Length: 443
Image 1 (cartoon, one colour):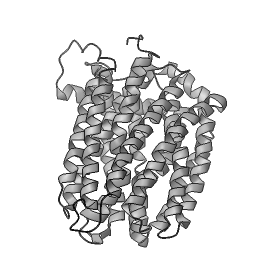
Image 2 (cartoon, helix red, strand yellow):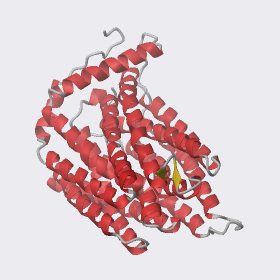
Image 3 (cartoon, one colour):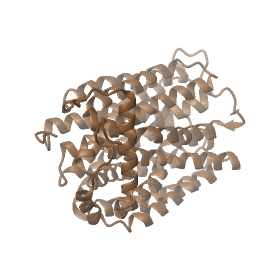
Image 4 (cartoon, helix red, strand yellow):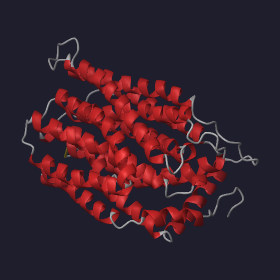
């Protein structure tokens, strides 16, 4: 692998701008799409015997299981084929195309809307495998925390700016059915625009990322790539058991990221369904999260320089526990309470995401970064169990309030396990990795 791009500022800026590109979609996903589904696409209060809040949470959780199966294989294939940029481009455009289709799903078409949402999420998550895989290639151990934080910071800023535009549109809309700009139409326009934003800024980012390396000498078919991908994946899983500190971090991350993933996925439906808040308030809350998270990501990057990334992540987890409890006690219809919650979430969200990614990046072998970030994506998708648990509890109790307390449990258990991780030992273990199934003729 060429090393000329390491710590190159133009390359780093181009890489970080992909976070800017896709954050418009993921922000709209949390702030608008979930609430749009429960408030507009759902024909009645219940569908298939479930509330919109429960159905959406179960979708996110079960969709995560499907994504979990595909990500590590894609990463392994990309490493072997030296094709991170190609795969990033392909999956980003796939996801964005389905986002563009989302607003055209008619009211009441629940199965179609869920299918389109799953494919868009698949493109988003798959593209991030290859985006994250560039991180060890463009940075070094002493800069990776700041580079990762910069990507998240630009993502929060870009997503926040787009959400601001969408929020203006939504505030000028009306819930009167004969209005020129209805709330439903404003939401559809906002969703469509996030897809355009994703495509446009992805082109800017891709133009500044390193080109793919030389292709393998042997021409390979789909079956060959599948064999290589599964071979490397199975070999890595087997070896992971012999690296206890890295494995311990992985388990801790899966658990506490289940909490953050649940907050991101269900905040909109929880606010619309349980707290009975208006779409304008929900969108404003997500706007607050985005802009505060920009500063939070940068600040925790500096905090990490002082106390280390592990301790910095632990600080955020203490705050997350308090947030989950606070969400349980917010009264129905309390705009102020929900906006206060959003402000605190924004402060810690940037820190926990950016530092978890960079901490993991310092524990894995650089020559197989896409494969290992494929596993990182698997860990993230395993974290989809959080929304799944939320959905099950919400469906069983008939309320999201009891379900929201499950989020606190994820943060507490993850915090306890993370405290036991020996980061130095995990980093030293990189020198002992070797890969089975890494060549075209591997068994």
